[in-house]
Length: 534
Image (tube, rainbow, N blue to C red; front, side, top):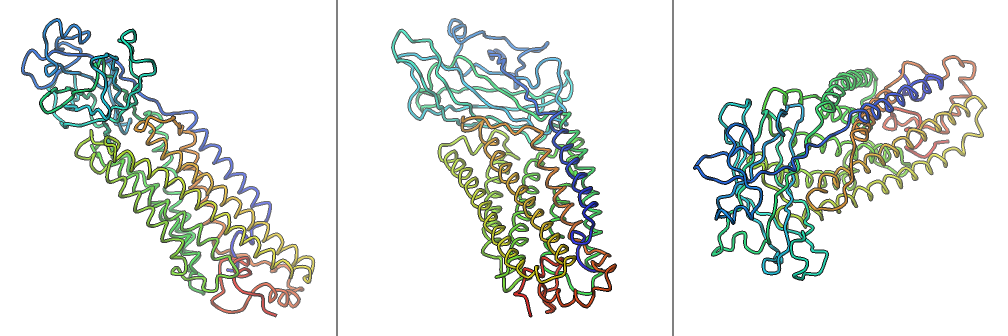
């Protein structure tokens, strides 16, 4: 075998391969676009009066408790605030939850009226006594799932003048994180919320006149989940087969694998790791850690992909005198690994704790909110800086190749056209790599903002399912293309041109070196590795 497939495959076949990959990329976007995410709105909140010492209170149904239309009715009946329960049933009547929904995210919003003698104090904290229960039919008893006392800081603005004439108008309050479940293993969920009042301990004092509590539930669309699982199920064997095929060809060579070839294998392994459809088990098992595990898998892939691009460019730089050594790249790869570790710690601080307490949120405290916001901003800046650095490395590679092209005019026409074709193919692959990197950085930034927008009340950036499946498909197609194009080829350029062998051998010396450690997967790799020898 000699050279890589990207060098020896005919232009016609490469164009056909590119068109096929583009069609698959378009299909990945279309699949997600046709089946989008949906949200379940639970805006109806029922107030119940605790007359009996029962544990759980239903807002509707045969065993529903007594309803209150407003706090004014509670005052008229002399019902204390400690005896009022806000009961919410998930889902709405005559519907069922499904494991295909994958997760439940619930957001909390208070409707608070302005009163001159009962205003919201600065830094007001709401203490919530909240319980969560589940059942799988409409007649069995509720089973306790979680219970906690939580605090949420109110962030409300009153847009008009604070006068007696404006009493009764509502504050504009930010959305607050309430609950997140990593799996939807049961059909029905019941949430009971109390706002305990203790004036001596300053519990729920200075929070204004609460008129209503609104809960908004969000879950993944079941149809999207099925498409997502199907994509993973299809792509896992595809990447696994091409990876085994690629490494088999590498091991059949007489020389040992170089660093770039090992990195391509590692990239394929990380892609396979994120592809394995373990989510199928979440349909039959109550695995609440699936969200955390998914984040870990994606973090591993991010680290591998970003490191690969750095080494992929670095190995093609002329001034990289110690190529084929991973330790040379510690200054570039080290920050990537450190950033991924920070992402893992950040994720563990929230979703790790949510495994035992679904009501916990790092956004609940002022310090946690500031740290989370700072982390998102820094992560976005680092992602942009990485892309700029990658663009700089690609520019250096292009400049290096341009310097080598000065040797081309001295060659025969056929040989010169051959090397010009190799250079064009490599440059095109580098531009595709930059495009993939740009889309990855955009996806990372938007996904971080989208994950936090409910918590910090900013502008919503929607990552629709088309973008989600499209980026995921792009990663797989890119890894597939790299392993296929950089696999050793059975063909050798010039087999049909034996009459020019003598002339060609002299021209080869101008662009490549005969030193053993410069051997590599492609002619471009060899050409950019050392200064040409005379």
